[in-house]
Image 1: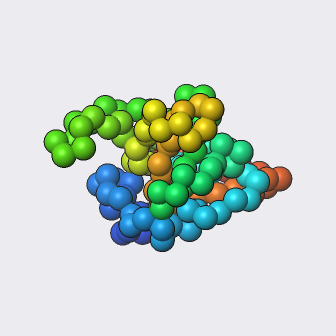
Image 2: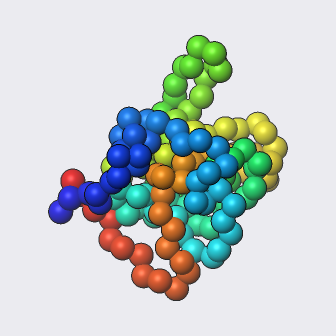
Length: 132
């Protein structure tokens, strides 16, 4: 089996660790019951119940499904230490995670690129995760 086909823009974000511009992603202002999966491999990552409006221009989630997201420390000279988040199954770049902002009770904000995820509405069967 192979991963899902990606557009050039999706590849730039997912494979090259790019970032889409804020406030333009299809899931930024999107609140429908369901599950967000990895666009590359279909792994379930976030429940829509964990999504909240952080006002940052990207979809924000205060928790992920257990074991679905891997945190990777990064040192960005102009921003200090950040943690990148990747799909734990396929390594797709999702975005970054921030703590200490006090937006929700979990005190965590997964800031995710819409191009890295795909939405599956509640009641629709989730596709099986893919391997390369």
